[in-house]
Length: 352
Image (cartoon, rainbow, N blue to C red; front, side, top):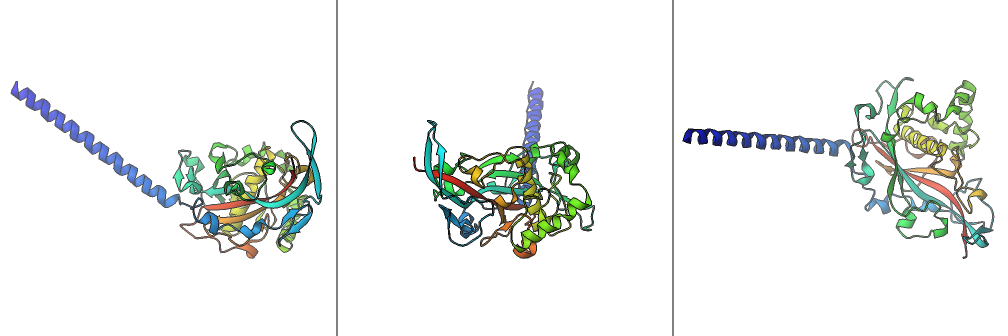
């Protein structure tokens, strides 16, 4: 009997030892994974002091009130020139107001190599990845067949509302008041498949020819020299390349800032094409934000937030990186990028 009890006690001790060893092994693997995640999923420190220091606050100007611009800066050519306006109130009666227009920091686009990596949220990671959605900055040959691939996350970033700065409630057409995730490319099968993406925007077939692509040189010249991209050339992203297809596979023929800016422009174009982004520019947007199925390029400006911020300027879609930041890249530790999306917002600020 004593021998049986001794054997059972020994078996229990061995089992406890094995379970303890297994738990320690799993804990070590988790620690290694967390350490690896911290190395490849950086913290952009968006929600911190950089929210004040690394945003180009002077880019809010000019503020246009009743048709008169206040402060320096450029106004889009298609912005509203009206001074007074009227919008229908909930009772169906016209409510008079004053037209205001401004550059509004509205969205954040982050481009990451590791699926589920969220630099905007302190380097947090979501279980969204698989080997087929891993990103790459491209190979070293930099030939015509070489392409990079990045996943993207699209955030609402109504920073003027969050900081309780000048922004009338009537002009918050999205009704967004907090920093929030709006779109994850890991859940979108068209972002990493060119053929699948074609069926969501078949007009790409009409611009896939040398003449249409040569016209992008005009768009590049206009965006770079006078900072006015051409909305009529909807398939062009100026000096960055072509907007189509709406996927994360980016030719690595330019510098990294141009590649990431092109990816951001494709994000905006794809969301507009699907009715997930609205027009906030012009007379049609004074009382409501209508759908714009083609990207209104003049409505947007971009400024890099991470890894090297554009704290004193921003750039238009298609503007050559030679003017705004071909040096804004840190190899190794700065491969992921964050862009702050500015949009021109015309609004009828009613009195009632």
